[in-house]
Length: 246
Image 1 (cartoon, rainbow, N blue to C red):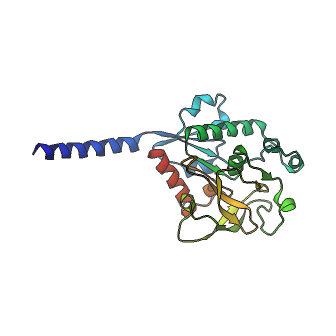
Image 2: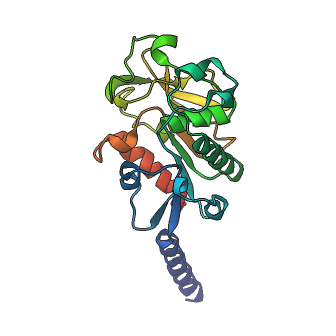
Image 3: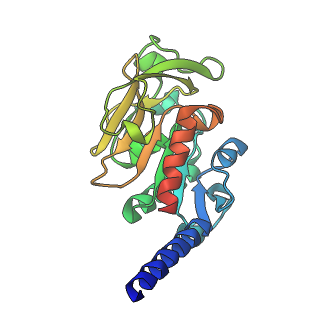
């Protein structure tokens, strides 16, 4: 009888602790927020902070349960020792480059879950020692149109099944994604695995080796704008939530 009571008590305690764990308020830091990103990760137990609007970044880093490096301007090519790309870059936001390098390094050192979107995936590669194409049409060609006066759509294909589950549903090996960029990954940094490519060979999704970091992924497209019924949109978000609430 005593052992039975003990078992029941242990079960109730475990369920109670699990419920408390789910109810904890978590914090996601966006490197630069927009309504699309905020809505993508909207959850009753998640606070979203816009690092770009906060002067003292150190004051929020300790709160981070996850970090999202969002889309935006071209990264300063000097961060990957390329002076030639300066002439093909758009306006450079030097403070944002510094901010995102700091966020990446904090995530890497403290094993905080991180998702890089578009520019964010590029920053993930640059911060890890990789390089970028400065302008895809002139340096790689026009076999695939990645930007045409705004957002376009094109196909990508899975090239690495090992890390596919972090980003893509397993029922297909090609996907239609949105695209709005003129730069992309060139030399891939150590420990970064390319998971999918467009049909001109450009990396479209990457995952940091899980022996180096448990959950650090990047996509060149914009899952936050794919729509709430899109499987990729849902899968990346749900996998991020699993790491946050684990």
